[in-house]
Length: 292
Image (cartoon, rainbow, N blue to C red; front, side, top):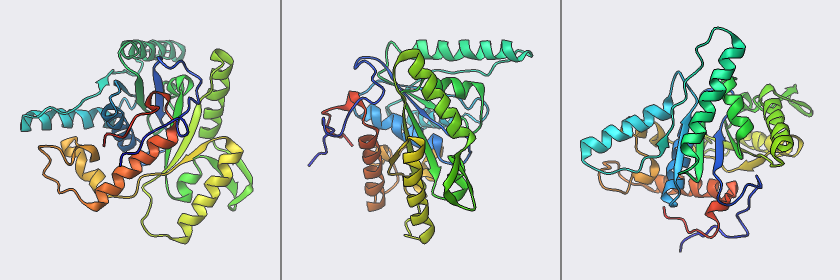
């Protein structure tokens, strides 16, 4: 029986017009949280749902998302297969020596990338770098949805809030939370539209440890204070690291050309991806049945 995204599970948090492009920024300011893995699987999942998807990789140095798609193209060519590929718009970092001139250059680069994707795409997925950059701030400011993956630990918890001896009653927003708050405020003033902020627990341990429970309780408390929604995350699975060289995703494992045996663990991982899409409440998916 197929799960259907219906009116009870889908809304339009950003208030954007139904036919307009929806920008999803996968971002935080910490490396190693799995942003690129989440962005890749989210983009390909949306394509499986018959959406036209564009991608902007803002990690101008490491370019993990771009490298993932290059691996995917090479794999498809070697296997003589057709694999779905999102539209990718490159964005270069500014080269001007003067800071103001460099910011202007990067603003133009960002606007050009958006303009190239907007006419043909219903969604644009942005893979933000794990650091504070001007391009990242531009993307967060234009987002309809900000999706923040964090590892299931108090080390990543500090990305959202600073606490004194773990006392949540005195928690103060971190620099990243303050940046998101500024982006949300400025967009509301500029466009009268809101940004939906969703935090997902990523790389979750399969062991129900005390620390895992404490992180969950802490995030629930912070969500009310900082104004984000919580999404079920992806479990810690070796398969995500194994897929990168071929550019495949969990959604490709049952297709022709995949030599990886499909297991119950992969079934559970696909359900995690479905659960994420349900929590994101994307208007364009209203009434659609999951096709994976």
